[in-house]
Amino acid sequence: MKTGRHKRAFSIILVPPGGGKPQSFSFGRKHMLLAVIAAAILVVLIAFSIAVLGRTNRVSVTIARLKSENRKLREERQKVGKLEDELGRLRVIEGKLMTLLGVDKRNSDRKLTLSPASMLTRGFTPERVYLGKTPTLWPVRGEISRGFSNDPGGHKGLDIAVPSETPVRATGEGLVEFAGEDDIFGNMVIINHGSGISTLYGHNSKLAVARGDSVKKGQIIAYSGNSGKSSAPHLHFEISRNGRQVDPLTLLSEQ
Image (tube, rainbow, N blue to C red; front, top):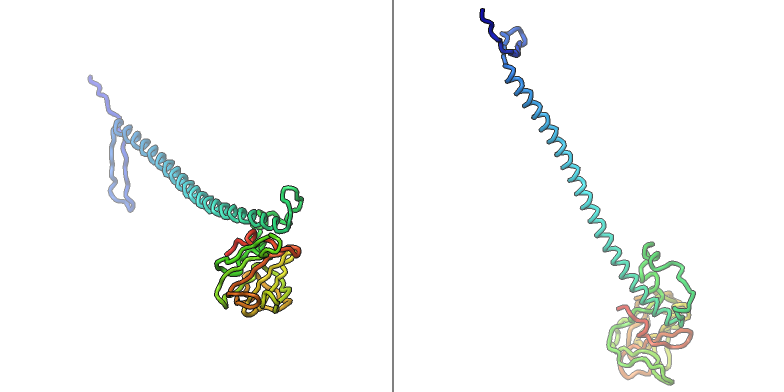
């Protein structure tokens, strides 16, 4: 009597809803194993793809964040560069101001209420900190026909050749101490800038301010001319510290 070996088979029966004819699918053991392996590989591939996609998204987010941070850093570096430039200007102007005031920076304990850095970070600018009252703006732009001389009896200011009726501007903020006629300088203006510093503007054709007026830097205070003891239209300009004239070229820096 012969006995046969029956191969194991797996059957899947699909019963349609509504009582339709069932469908039967039979698989051998080998096919079922292959199907399980294929399903496992598919699950692994899906999981790997999800992991890679998630990592790619995280990398993209990180790259975008780093680009944004780099852009902000570049903007900050530009701001720092501008602050350094402004601080450089402040140091130059401070040195000129100390010279004008007769203060030796090496031996002086005088400190500003705010450091240049803190003044800039609080929204101040050199114009507001130093250049407001300090006479650093050229009153007119023209050729210097005669310079300053510190010799006894020498020329105590600058003669700047300009056409008549050229606007003359205050070199710094201050109070008009004198506005009127002078035997030598003709129509003349003197501005008191505080700290013992004053400026004189002579030989004007007419004046635009009166004694006691408060003026801002750059404000028109007169119009140049040839009044007083003058042989040609020009502006005579002086800077004085405690009543003694100093060379304006040591302080003038702004156009």
